[in-house]
Amino acid sequence: MGFIKNLEQVLFPPHCLSCKKDTPEEPAAMRWLCLECHQLLIPRWQKSPYKPEIDESYYLFDYKKDGLAKKLLHALKYNFVKEAAASLAVAMEKERLNIKKINCDLIAPVPLHPKRLRERGFNQSYLIAQKIGEIIEKPVGEDILKRKHYRQPQMKIKNRNNREKNIKGVFECAKPSFAHVAGKTVLLVDDVATTGATIKECARVLKNSGAAKVLSFTLAQD
View 1: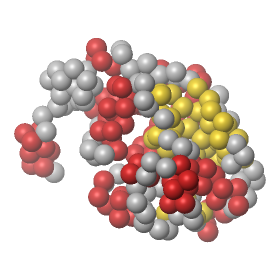
View 2: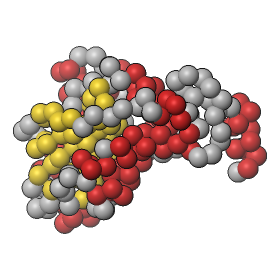
View 3: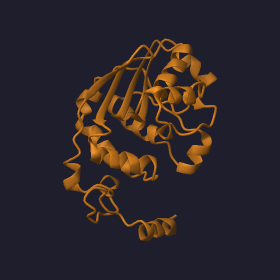
């Protein structure tokens, strides 16, 4: 494990994704975003309508306008830089008081298909959900939702209607989770919402499985 980590440092030396300044290996939150650039990462507590599927939807960044947040999310999601989640967690801490107001019974991260999970090595939505769970002191159910089909990534599909067709029927609520979901308020967590097709489909599955209310939290919306 140490050899792999050292090799990683040689091939991918840590540097700030924004200003390119050299950064230390530890702590993880400073590895890919320096202290000065952390101060430029400014979250804003926002709500958006995704009704009727989702009762309340919260997010922190505008994906098009907040370029620094976009770089971190891109590194996390597409370049598999897991440490970027630590930098994003710092941004979430800045909105701790608003996040603590989220009223739910349990947290469900949007799942990856097992094939995609093997490729990436982690589910970025689960990492975000863990931070939310720590702040609001609610359980995170990693296996509440499952992806039963492997489909083309949503980001490759530009048309809204095609995105909805692509994600339709992809998710299911795991049978052991029915009892946990029934009558509960579930907070869905994902990294980015573009058209909202993914979180709305997850919400539909949760409500069909007995959830009383579904809320959502994404770091950014497009």
